[in-house]
Image (cartoon, rainbow, N blue to C red):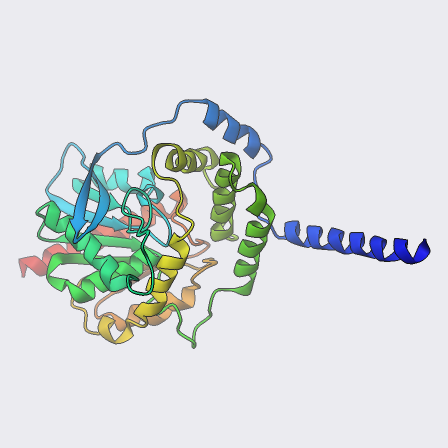
Length: 348
């Protein structure tokens, strides 16, 4: 009997250690998150697409977009491009509303593979895409809307797409803003994805894998990722607004594409370095990055920003891999200066 009980006890002890290891570094979620999620599911959802929605075609691929206009629209266009596996809903109203109030027209869209754009179900060896193809999706929207030029703003992978758009289509770009991004993600002279970040994501997936079919788990999972991306930033997330966004994506749109990570990750890796091309840019450019970015460390920005002629950098102390409301006034102030720079160049 003893020879059986000892191994079983050791095995149970090992399971306990593994369990504690899994939950030890999981992001600390609000104590009332389950209550908030249930309230959101039971309640009425706010409208998160207040603008005019439409579809543009890039060859056989449909790209979903939304146009937002304020009362004093001056017919100056801003194109917002989101990051890996994210949809247009990632651009918060506290970021784009001031732009609308300042007279700009704002266009945000779903990258191919997410949201209401085509999900590339036949993605494979003969149909994979890179950032070059993804850059043409934004240009397709401008063509569809008969817009000659636009200011382009991208976050994370969206910043990489913006860079590629400025490289490939400089005559269509008024200015380039690249937020929490990089000129070469796989630069072996820079820090790769921090091991602590990757470990937290793996633990999160392992813990929630069995219950991912439940809406509540999907929402909680997405929120936990947002907490990981935030890192140690000295600011709080607007929990209820973010949970509304996740539920809206699941309930009113197409939900989250589990294959988008692989597809977008391939596009980034296959595209390689843009360093030499960035050195030839002649577009007013702004590079924004947070010192507490947990996914793309700030040393990426410090390397590629000086490569772009006449670019401006804004390094925000304490900002993680997100665009929190706390830093938005500083970001907008830099954006307006960039737009003015372009205006002055055009005047000359």
